[in-house]
Image 1 (cartoon, rainbow, N blue to C red):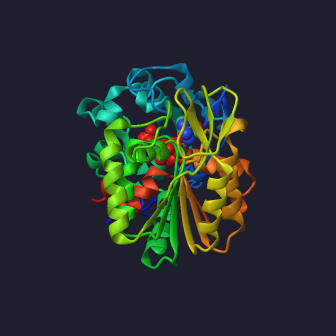
Image 2 (image 1 turned 120 degrees about the vertical axis):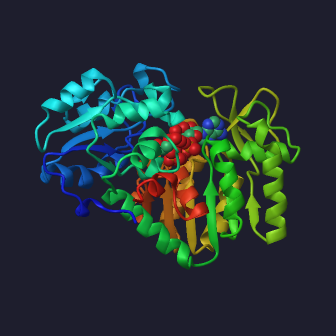
Image 3 (image 1 turned 90 degrees about the horizontal axis):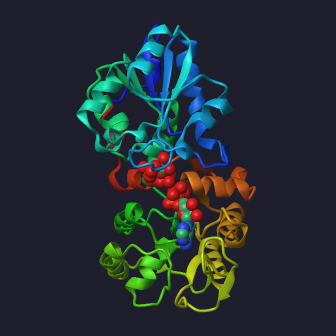
Length: 384
Ligand SMILES: Nc1ncnc2c1ncn2[C@@H]1O[C@H](COP(=O)(O)OP(=O)(O)O)[C@@H](O)[C@H]1O
Ligand SMILES: O=C(OP(=O)(O)O)[C@H](O)COP(=O)(O)O
C-alpha cells in the first residue's frame, strides 16, 4: 500500500521531498512553471504541519557533472526560498540541522552526481543522512530507477506519495479503464530511445498513432526514406520497423509526416519541403501543412487524445507552427484530451490553449510508462 501525506506526522521531522522541477529555463528565466506550481500543495501541506521541507530535484541531463546552466538556483529564486549549492555532504547536513519546523530549502541538481542516475548505494546513503520522512511528488520522474526516486524510498521506512502523484494516478486510472474511441495518441519530441518502446504497448490500447518531432525521422528512415541530417536514432530502426509491422497486424493506423519544414541547422532559415523525403544536408525541424491537415482529420473524429512530445523545435518560432497547430486542434475538438511532458505542456500554454485541455500532466515519459505498465518504479518504491 502507498501512504499519502495525510497519513504522516511531519512535526519537527526532516522531510526529503522529491519534486520534478525539471522546467524549461532560458537565460535564467523559467519558461513554464507548471511543474513547480503543481508541487506546491504538497510543499505547503508539509510546511504547515511543521515539517522541515528539503526539496530535491533534477534539471535537464548534466550527466553527473556540475554545469551552471543546469543549476536549480533560478527555481529557488522564483519561489523566494533558500538554496544550497549542493545536494549531499557537510554543507547540506549542517544547514538541515539548523532548520526549524516549517522551514523550506531547495537543494542543487541531484544529477550533478553520477550516483543519482546510477541508483548508487553510496549516494543513497548520503541522501538518507538528512531524511526522516521521504515524500515523492515527482510524477514526471517516477519512471526513472534513480537514487532519489527509487533507491532512497526503498531504504526508508517512513515514506509516502504527495498530492500531485495521487492526482495524476487517479486521472490515468480513470482514462485507462474505458477510454472512449477512437483513441489517438500523438508522439513527438526528442527523447526517441526513451519513448519508442512505449509505442509497442500503446498498440494494444489505441486506434491511431500520429508521429511528429524527431521520432518521425527514425520511422521514416526505417521505411527507407531519405531524412538528410535529421535527428535519427539508428539503434532503433529495427524497433521502428517492428512497430510498423505490429500496427498493421493489429489494425492500428500509424501516421507519419507527409511534408516538412527543414533547415541547415537549428538556427537556420526555414524551408518548406513538399515531399516525404528530406534533401541531403537538411534537417527536418517541423511538420508541414499537409501533415497538419491530415493529423487534423484524424483528431477531429477522435474521442480520446493523448499527446506527448512537440511536433518540431517549437522553441524557435520558425519551427513552431506544427506544434502550435496541434495544440489549437486539441483545444477545438470534442474529445477527452490529455497532454503530458515538460515541453509539450509548455507548448500548449504558449499557444494559449491550456484551459481547453482536459488534463495537463506533469509527466510525458512517466504518463506513457504508467499506461504501459499500470504503475511506475517510483510509485512501487513507496510501498511498505
Ligand atoms: N525534429 C526535431 N529535431 C530535433 N529536436 C526536436 C525535433 N522536434 C522536437 N524536438 C525537440 O524535442 C524537445 C522536447 O522533447 P521531449 O522532451 O521528448 O518532450 P516532452 O518534454 O514534452 O516530454 C524540444 O526541446 C524540441 O525542440
Ligand atoms: O522532463 C521529464 O520527462 P518528460 O520530458 O518525458 O516529461 C522528467 O523530468 C524526466 O526527465 P528525464 O527524461 O531526463 O529523466
